[in-house]
Image (tube, rainbow, N blue to C red; front, side, top):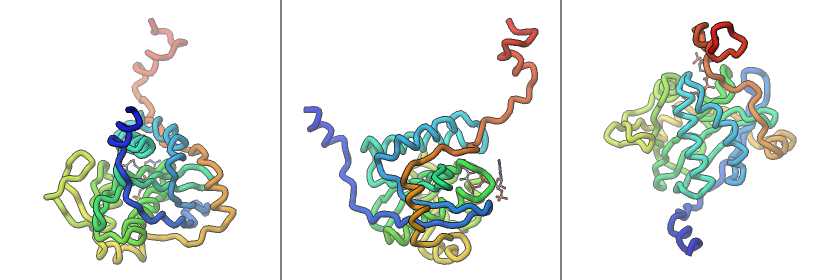
Length: 239
Ligand SMILES: CC(C)(COP(=O)(O)OP(=O)(O)OC[C@H]1O[C@@H](n2cnc3c(N)ncnc32)[C@H](O)[C@@H]1OP(=O)(O)O)[C@@H](O)C(=O)NCCC(=O)NCCS
């Protein structure tokens, strides 16, 4: 009975070409590998996404909460045609992107999360996911939304996305923007970087284990001294 019900609950994924891994040298001079995460690697990602749910800065909280659910949905077969890509520097988790195939022609971009700031790692990971939709899956357009001003700047402005406001996006039903094949081709030279094949030693290191991010975003400091002291057991005024 349970097995029969699981068959109904579990969507049958459409076969999708795998993402071909690539690597690039990022602004710090380090090599970053971007590759597809297998379903059984999702439990290794979740512990690094969960702490960001509590980071009330730059919309990390809502993006992490939604991404956590999407990753779990993928792991537990509760999403149709999802994929997950990870960016790693020396094995360390640097960014996560995901999305889904809606039809043969249309893709849905879900989330982009940078786990190390200031190196455009998120921008590179987003570009890799667009590359996957257009060059891996051969799609015609990808529906996108931004939850944060930094996301808006990175996607809507840098790529010059088109409005598709009549189409609600799966993330909250908000109006969609579209990255078409034409826009992708124009942006490709400047925004989509990376080389293939990935040198064996880099790929082996990346595949070996998803290592924790060394400098993940943290909640902002509480600048109000009185509130800080409330939780300080050594403080004079605690009661
Ligand atoms: C949006 C996101 C993926 C972009 O990642 P990214 O390309 O690696 O860029 P960063 O976030 O590191 O940097 C963004 C800007 O903030 C600056 N910045 C650098 N370090 C920073 C830090 N520690 N804190 C805040 N801003 C920082 C950068 O210099 C950059 O400025 P620029 O646009 O002039 O280059 C990333 O900000 C992120 O994960 N945000 C939270 C989730 C989110 O909003 N996702 C997108 C949903 S639409």
